Image 1 (cartoon, rainbow, N blue to C red):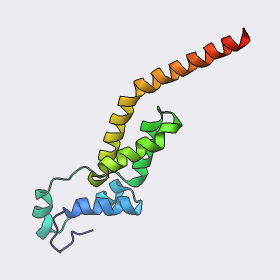
Image 2 (image 1 turned 180 degrees about the vertical axis):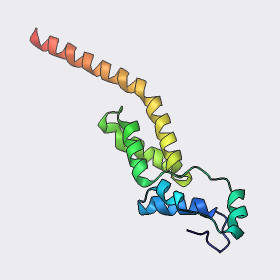
Image 3 (image 1 turned 90 degrees about the vertical axis):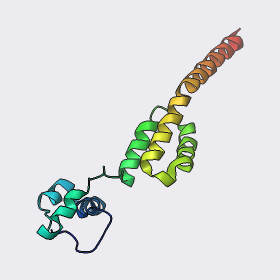
Amino acid sequence: MACQKRFTFECPQVKRMNECRRAGLAVDEALQKWSCDSTYEKTCKAFKATPPRMTSEEFIIEQNNVLKEIPKEFKDRLSYMAYERGHSAGYEEIISILKGLVNNLKQPIADFQKRISMEIHNAMIDTCK
């Protein structure tokens, strides 16, 4: 496949990678067959390929992995909070914010669960007397 002949701020190779990802094609296979026209080869080499952006499917998988450690009652709220704080910067930022929220809440949630289980245990002992 040859480079597109119109002016663009994005390297045609990176653009092709993004098109393949959106279409669900294997990016490696598409790029093996990809080459620039000789007239545009210099332009393509001048661009540095940026890391590919996270797709919505990758985001959902990563979000579920981060939220695994949190009780289900907290998941929706934390997900919403992270989205509200970082959606304008992309999925990567949302995941970063979500990881921070989860890390900040892990210990308080563990302490709360421990306290509740002790209260339940003590209440059961009191009712047996």
